[in-house]
Structure formats: C-alpha cells, structure tokens
Amino acid sequence: MKKTLLIIIWSILMQLNVNAQTKTGIENYNFKSNSEPYLWMPIIHRTGKKGLHTEFRYNYEERKTASVYIGKNFSRDSVLSYSITPMLGWVFGKYNGASLALNADADYKKFFVSVQTQYTVSKDGAADNFFYTWAEAGYEPVAWFYAGVSTQLTKVYKEKNITEFGVLAGFNIKNITVPVYVFSPFSKERNFIAGINIEW
Image 1 (tube, helix red, strand yellow):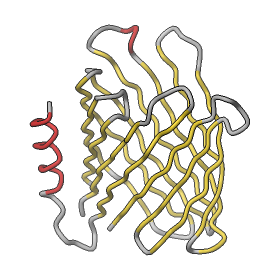
Image 2 (cartoon, rainbow, N blue to C red; image 1 turned 120 degrees about the vertical axis):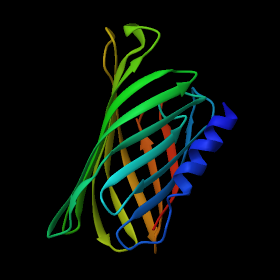
Image 3 (tube, rainbow, N blue to C red; image 1 turned 45 degrees about the vertical axis):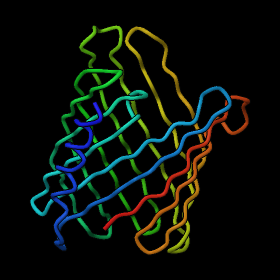
C-alpha cells in the first residue's frame, strides 16, 4: 500500500513543470470532532495546459483509503469566472471501488461558490455505495480574507441522508490559503476542519 501511494504521488509530482498555463495545488485538511479521532486529509491536484486534470486524495472517501482521479477541466476567466472538472476515479485501501466525480467553482466579483460531488461504487457490493457532496458559498470583502457557509451531504445506499451545515472563514497570503470550517456549530456533535493549502 505504502509503495503504491509513493508511486502515485511521485507520478503526479513529476508532472509539475513550470508553465504559466498549468495549475498545481497541495491541500492539507485536518479534521477534529468530539466523537471521532483526528484525521489528516491531503489532496494533490494538477491541471495541465490542455485541461488534463489529475488528483490524488488520502483519507477522503474513507480512513486509510487513497484515491486517484483523472478528468478534463473546462474553465473561463471573465467577470463571471468558472471551472468545471468531470473526473473518473479509482479508490483503494480500506475501501475499494470506483468513483464518478465533479468539481465546479464560480466567481462573480467578490462572491464565490464551489461544489465537489461524487458517486462511489464499492467492489464489495451495493450496500457500501455512496453519494457525497460538499458545497460552499462565500464573500471576499478584502484580498486577504473571506467568509461564508458550507454544507456536506452523504447518502449511503438505502440509508437516510446525512446532512451537515457549517460556517467557514479563510485567510489568503499570496498563494497560500488557510481555511477553517465549523460544522454543526450549535451542536455537541460539532466538528472542525482546518487547512493549509498552496497553489501555483
């Protein structure tokens, strides 16, 4: 497992050539709640000059599980900017299967929305299939700060939806972003996610 992860990470990093038309990001999310142990969720992604998008995630679909995605990015920079990336993924580790995913972002002046959604199929049977969506919307009053609301929805096969609502705030320092999320902030089941992300 560790050798496979190293090979995948190395393959993605080998593509990180310096090119004004490429975009590369490394995201580090840290999850903490009263009911679950600490969890680290790293994500590495790259979009090439022709729109080819590759993405590696760990502990995202399940603990001790990695996933690799490949897709095509369609984007436009204008007054209303957007980025849409449909992807196909392979999930392996504690959870094994395949995934169809979509990342979408849009910005208008100082407002932004973002959605990550996926449907994941387990090789162990339909009972472990799930649909997941993370969405957020916010406002950036100044270049170094933004705030907004967020929600995440999980639907496991033949089970009730699990929906959490939260608030977010973030700080921008050049190409580094530090987002902080609090889900179910008025509940004993509240949980926190903090990230340190860099993009170039």
